[in-house]
Figure (cartoon, rainbow, N blue to C red):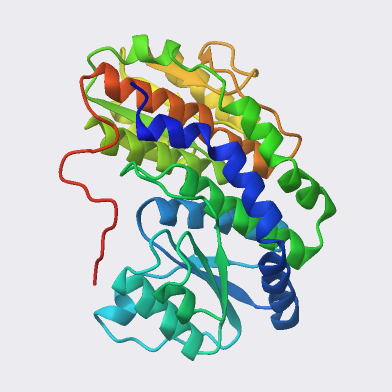
Length: 340
């Protein structure tokens, strides 16, 4: 029997196409507002998978628009009552449900402080939409599995579409428009060879760099959520500053490399860990010692990184079932978490 999670993974290409078709006016309005504001910096407001989407957008904005992006702790508003000076800023709040009290409180505070605020949410109307000046429906559709998949992807697609409108970056706009086609290829890729090398391991590292670090963070969370497996995400550079000490014989490492400026160094680090006896799988043809996983080269470094999450989702859903677990209903988790 097909799980809800698998069904929702397969829906990602269609969900992305629906978003790009039906939210075009809201995307254009948000992009226009950002051009008019010309923010000196941006802040993001999110938790969980949504925060990993925000991390992806941080790298995308810094690389494309040249504006620094910082993540705000939602408790600054909900618990501590801090008043931040955001008059020269823009804010991006991401929430699938649109109603987590601390996310809403921080978004309201950012809007009050004068930031151009954009809500990326799968639920309209919702408190997060009311809290922001530019609500954008990501149109992922109902998501029944506890672990977010298509809402995570569509949050990033929406953010990239807004970024393209804001900056007028034609190559990014073309790449975003082509994402449904690229996702349709990526969702069919098979990473099950990685399962044999995981074996009875109780822990693993997931590495990435730049936008792919955000994908690694999401992947590590999904190992925990769906499979009860300890996974830690690190920058492929940062892992060398201490965490590599734990990497020994048969230690599993998943390395997510995109076709971008960091690919060569990431592949080199993957090979170095493989030489130490670790079992390393990497999404790069540049690796010589590490085992290669299939990937879709989208032709743009940002969308190339995003496409990596689709075959991973397919892998981790199957991995969860192979361990006798139900990826739709992880223990101790709820679909909507409302923190204050």
